[in-house]
Image (cartoon, rainbow, N blue to C red):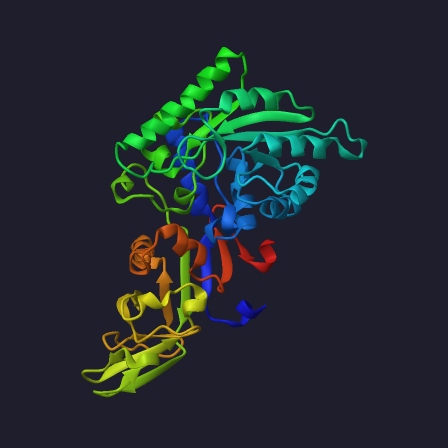
Length: 389
């Protein structure tokens, strides 16, 4: 409710996200499956509206946790949904009830899932799973050294269907990366061992955004675009591989304007002191919105097409910008925080200032903003976040 009464909005162009998937489809071919990742609320864009827009274009959706998959199911999404983080024991029953596919990274989890599928006399219930193989990420999954034998045992479990096998690349954003080829070799070793035991798993997948863009040997049966779904590239050297559209614009409005004199200071700690008369505007965005305090006196936004600098320490709910060089700027003027004319550069700039990656900026920046969805292909505006649930 609170976001309905704030002037900060996040515009999401669903047609741009759909266009990015079509570019990926063009690259990897018409027969290879595409599973966009919509975890973490679709990287901050809104999981359900994004899923609804993409469902006719894709083969599956990837989420991190069971509750994310349940939210999509209850919102009407019917395509396969893979829960990449697997699930704790208490999540397995609702996951099965909602027809979610679970990533499995151990024999123990597979056995627990088998038992859950057989409970309550439901012998016909089958748990569909994708087995995760750890080829070097060191996070989740069965070690590639033991994977073939473990998978053979998992396939013998009742009420379990091994639909897929996958691994996760650690450094696929790097150019001609030796470790990516090591992980690929390990994954292929597991597949070869399975073939020797006449074990065929229908869906094999390895490629995230970086691998989609530069390692076609990793594409296998399905690819998993994450960041590139939302118009960003995992590395600068990949920006010319295929054209992507940035779908997000975060905007707010000027609340108040002060005419400050030489020697006047701004915000907590007096980190900015005017050396000459300056025109300073306050805007309702702060570190509670994901704009880290580390961006104080560094971040740039846009007002009337002019780049303006954040001045003074960023507060929880507010920050100040220098609009001295913006002719005619007034209270109520739009301030573009992300998107607009320099959307992609703004995300990368903020990520650099915050000492992080663009993924984190997308997931956190503007999190209190009201989301408005635009779909030019549909010929209408799907509306705000409330109406898109």
